[in-house]
Image (tube, rainbow, N blue to C red):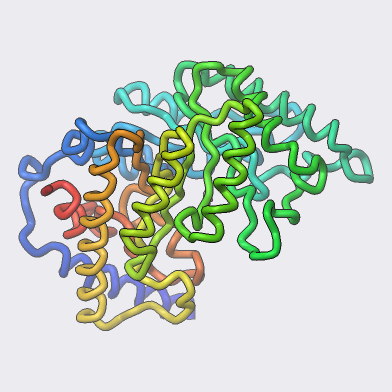
Length: 359
Ligand code: GLA
């Protein structure tokens, strides 16, 4: 069964590669993505440790900002209390420095990828006070290590609920331990630890009218209370079916109207509707049609991004090339997806790349 899935994925990758390989150009004829956007905003990529070697050439040529996909999350950096594991995060920062790239820090407070000790005290639950103390130690240790190297942080990730009947996510262990004050506390701690760092609230579904309003209530309240929030991170895990370009534009304007800078922090455009849990598309014609639609979508959204260059201070892709993307596992485990600008087979620019650079 596993072998079948592997063979099928390989065939799909080959088909996509063949479709995308049309009009192959030499490396010199391929413009640098970040240079094409030098007058607009930095272009980033989220990397795994392994990408530093696997995608070295693409990273060096096309990106001037970098984010750790997982290597700066709480559970990776402090797996046991007081035991910090900086090795991989350090390697990413060193790579960035060597190549004159910015580093976006991701992420300090999230309801996932946290270590289990964080919310425990002996056999019981840790008190809110203890959790905040631990958060402060974490933030101080991490931000002082990367001061001057990491220019901005996603301080709080995904605190707002998706449910119509809920404002903040009550199933978050942060909320359960501390109540809603954990959000403001985290921003204050981060600002104290590194007053120069730009501090972001980051979330998905940030273009959906109902969720956007809740996010805005949160941000307005934080700003009114003098909490140091500087930017809104719209994750941008989108697909060829949505959100629409006008929804994206409305959201950018809405967040910018709060006086915040806006970044697209986790951009990828899936070939599948987010709710589509069916098997991979294997029909080459259908695949080609979806890739063409993806290219058009990338063209349209970058047109909007360029229009809002006064408020957009960064656009980061959630990955480098189609050979390494979380979308191969989400929402369907093992279903190959092709959400980025460079292909899976030879890291060649896809049609979507040309649509983004040729404006
Ligand atoms: C969210 C998080 C990211 C990443 C993706 C899935 O968007 O912010 O760190 O984990 O989910 O890969």
